[in-house]
Image (tube, rainbow, N blue to C red; front, side):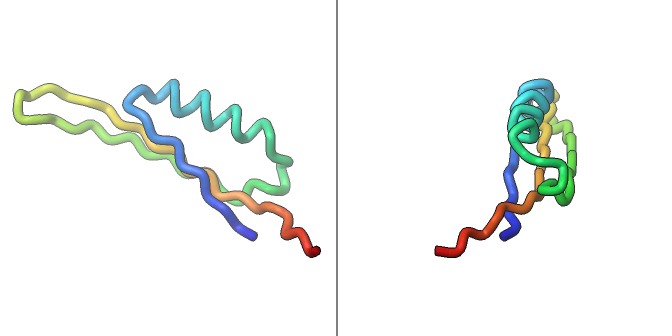
Length: 65
């Protein structure tokens, strides 16, 4: 079965650390794809805020009972 895990945060190092911790628990052959996006948004008071998203697509073993 294919699964996704999303890591979102306004502090990109936090999302990166959490994604790396998650990936450390997977075997290389389980990882299908890793996508990264970073967006800077400006609010009405002209304050900029960065938001980072990491998406991990991975495979888990289907267990037959």
